[in-house]
Length: 168
Image 1 (tube, rainbow, N blue to C red):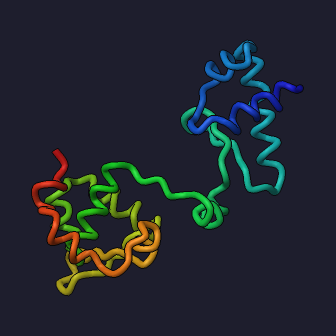
Image 2: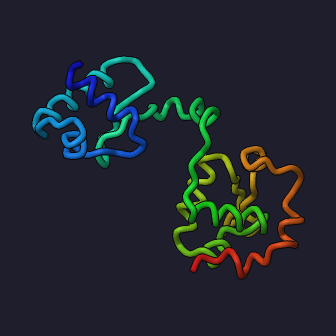
């Protein structure tokens, strides 16, 4: 087994980025050797016309290239952080909701949350009539992903959103 193959196996099975030191500890190989082999592996992946790449932003991780994200999303569940999920819950229960109102409820991080939710296709936004804010609505993808049938009127009546969904 080559060192590159062993590193590739480590990157394949880890679900998070790993550092040179972590790979070194796992494989019991000196860090300079790991660093050299991983650079060669990165070049191998970047020189071929495949769907995989090694991302080295915060450590090293083997991942599917962005160009193939539509395929991956069909096969794998979308990951949503707890904070973004809380924001999505408020949107779903109070829709249509103005983005400015949502910001008052959830804070400045709301803008990033909304951008992420739009990117994932769970919400859409449209300019409100005065053009100063956006109205936020859930999409059919949101209902399909969370296996919701009909609307969320019943949930709105059951949950006091102002008390339970504010970030503490």
